[in-house]
Length: 616
Ligand code: M6R
Image (cartoon, rainbow, N blue to C red; front, side):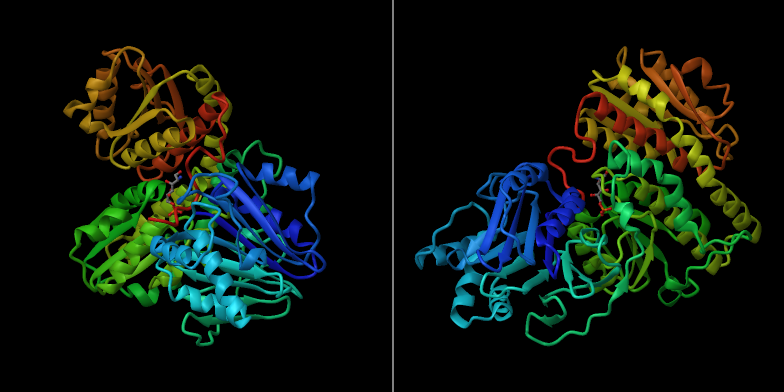
């Protein structure tokens, strides 16, 4: 969950490293630190608990000596609290070596006992310091940093990305990875390392992902990769299609505000080149894996958090259009129940980061049991798409705010494309239905622009509700996952109790929560909805209103049936059943952000969270 940056080149490394950390801070923000190999002052380092700004301020007042080789880290604490001592880098070889770590070294306790018995002293409570001391000892023995890393990783268990520098090796950074991400940025006379490409996209658009159990030795003009067993590896570079400015806040008050404003574009980019006006879907990246779809008799989605809600929306569409039974499972539950899967099962992982450890493990579990694996992912070069049988990239652009917004919409759209692709391959989705869906999907970006404009009204509502202690969300069919998504946003951003329910479940228990003043958001299906769910949800609204609830309805423009029973109606442009959730979610994203803002909370970096959960 931590962010890692490494640099070797001509530039002042502190600038590159702090810039990289700023772009990766969403990965963890308990503490931060840097280490630089300088020409005259050996290894210099500084680290501080708290957000990156504290470290930057310190370095502004007391700059470190200049150097052109360095590493930097922003932390999400696992072992040991967020203190200065536990911040990274950790030192080895008597302070001549610095190491940063992302992940968890599961056997650190026994290794620590060994090191203590041999007289080593520990300055922190972290598992990471064990690795720093071990690499230091090994380097002392044979004076080769790559070999020292190779020797140490063979003794570590768990998940780790490690970067090391040594003052006797100016111009060299060595990295290793197992189950945690590490990407190489390839420059001209300079090279970079990062937990993801955001760390260095300002300097180069060429990257190379490091594979599982590999070690990279980085110099300004050379990058060499070997396996943990010492075998040389030829890794293929790829082009980064993110714009450098996309990972900057621009003039926006928060990344989240910027990313909500980009929701229409995220949808347009995910559709681009994949859906003709006639409704025919072209996804050549899936052809080899899926063929005509006849070999697939079951689809299981694995995902966490917001990505699991996008999968739930996808479930309704894909099952309807393709006729294949679809299930959605939380990644961390999936492999522990020993699911019955085989080569006819398509396991679809959905992940913005492509690094969520639980989802990665679910994908590996599925692949080991012979299932076909497909990754819906937003991040090029990430581990999950690379380890999957095929990848369907969403093109939402970098998402920096911890709360996922535009990636959610892009994920739903990718699920719809998959559903149409399967429906067409299996001959179940007619030309007429496909063309109608294409028409609706192509209209979405424009309609989403309208939804983004609800911002000022939602801001007023949020200010009015700043003292609210509980908010409920109700939805039905594809509106149900939207209720869950709205509630998750409020929990993680505004730290208040929020729950989403399937509206049909109300009378089976949740209605007992309704008391005078309880705020309830209701996602109302269109009155034109062929399943006639509209009248049922309007009845639910009357039931909760009768018990004193204050109802905020997200309802189709001109839906007169809702008006008498709602305290507030947020209008949704006319569209079809499957497009409505994409439109309804926008005000809920805005509401979560604005309520956090009204409470004076940190919108982009909510407490205790990190953007990408790379430990189990
Ligand atoms: O990177 P992923 O899409 O795999 O992340 C999954 C969840 O951790 C993520 O959606 C999380 O729930 C967000 N903080 C929600 O806003």
